Image (cartoon, rainbow, N blue to C red):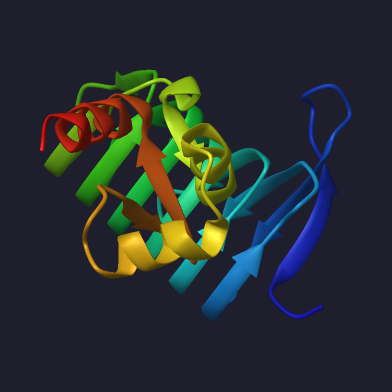
Length: 173
């Protein structure tokens, strides 16, 4: 495949998928993979496993992943479920959500950072079950702005503390 190389990593003998070609669109990996973006990428990126954005990479994307390391340039929303490491000479512009963040000297971030546990984040289905309502009803509430939610990729995410505050405010009205 042009622009994609699979190579053996020294880490526990894992394969690393190295994307070097200019790419645009949506990349979704439902199974764990060690992915390295080394060239230009524009779109949406959802991974499980380890994601590395190399020094020469220029990424304009919303990124969702487990363990993410960024050394290149990224513009967009980054949601790391386990950890985010920002290595020099990285430049990030956008919104970051992660439970653990390491920023090395020489790396730069412009935007917002929210440190939260993934345990505090809920999916549409989880909130529907939590509130004991149908998912369609909850989707309508989200669409109408009646309940606090944020969009990550194609999915809605909810902060449990905000949902609890919303429930309390509904009881008092």
